[in-house]
Image (cartoon, rainbow, N blue to C red; front, side):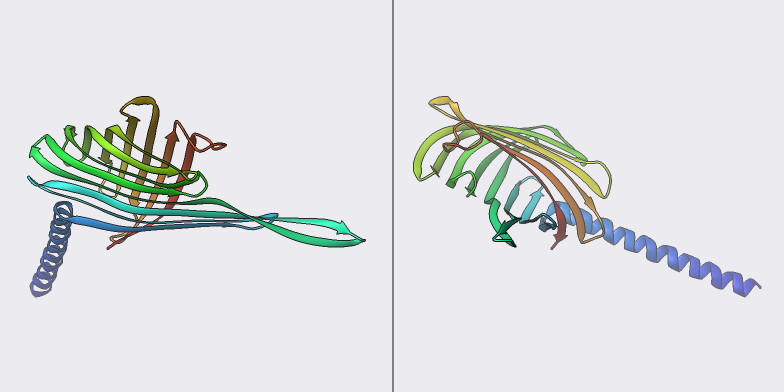
Length: 265
């Protein structure tokens, strides 16, 4: 009986040690991930059928990370496409004729990057830029690039709130009309880890033309991400883009809700 108890005890200790080792390795991997670059592929697809057939797809690549004392990087590429096929029927000479009409509802792509260089534990210098194409809004291209300074209002293991600002230059062509100008950039970003597997994030960027504050761009997003397992995650993002001087006949505001799965590389 004593031998059996000793064997059971040894097995229990071995299992506990193995579990502790796995947990330690997982914790070390998570800490290493925080210190290095995390890369994620995101994709989503929505299909409907009936009186109309719709298809919307989104795909993106995101990389972000921070090296203590050096700085951080946030960069990504995203693209969205959607189309709608409407079916109609009509009588022609006593016969029913079906027809379809296709319409592109979404067609845009964006690339962006923000690289920060640490100046002190709570301040940094940055270089930020992005490039946008939007067929529906008739934005042939819009690119921005500029340096600036920022500081962390809040920064710990769970939460981060940063404010930054500086000059930026805008190159754009909207509805075949080119316009390049100097602008100012003011931005904030907030992230919060609400649990070990879930986090929320929010950002806002205001970019007025330096010589005409009536001409400005305002973009914002709020989103949440939850891990399904070590590799897969569910991501939902609400994005809003406001252009005070859009192309003729176009709305100033573009709002989009994007949902999809993420795969960590």
